[in-house]
Image (cartoon, rainbow, N blue to C red; front, side):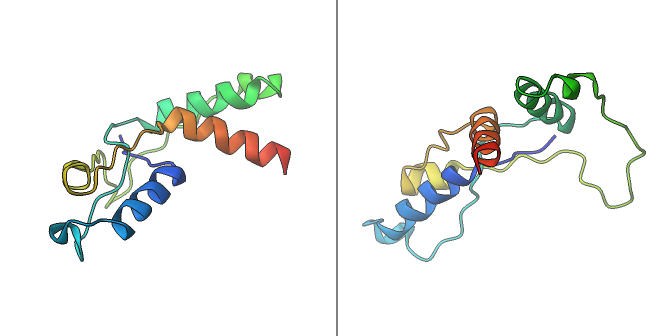
Length: 109
């Protein structure tokens, strides 16, 4: 599992950090993510579902699973608590919303 982050969340966090008025928030390092795990398989199925609405052949494709590689991180979940409390960050755009917006942008370009 991973804690992926849509770019609009990163922009939100950067704006909040740049405009923070609380000195305790200045010069700090923050984890910016959605604060929720998603498996790579679920990520694939969400993306496949979005793309297959305009390209039905995609719906037939299945992922190929390979053995884990040495050094692979099996699970990852970023703590965004510090960004929430010091910056007011919410990470309001979910991975699903981010995927939908990304596909819409990509197909319209």
